[in-house]
Amino acid sequence: MRLEDKTLRCVDCGAEFTFSVQDQEFHRSRGYTNEPKRCTGCRETRRAGRSSGGGSSARREMYPATCAQCGTQTQVPFQPRGDRPVYCSDCYNRVRPDSSRR
Image (tube, rainbow, N blue to C red):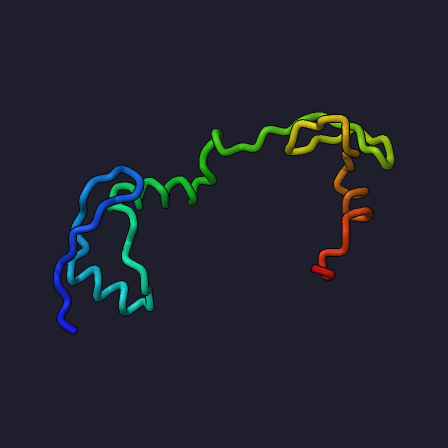
């Protein structure tokens, strides 16, 4: 099968970019079956965000809570609503459903 340059549209910025024969051969050599969805600039931006952990904006907000099992003050990654029990990580590991049954 003869390869030709393809013009694709970036899913992030909407710009058109060329998926060159050389890029297609590289993808094929790596066993990739899907065409790229992002232009070079958006790929680099996305890659930089992953490698740096997303910077300080990716830090998860934590909320104070009291463990319903042992009464310890803890922090959880969600806003407790008061209608369901909240557990510290130690108690949660003891009371959580067995994931092997799924």
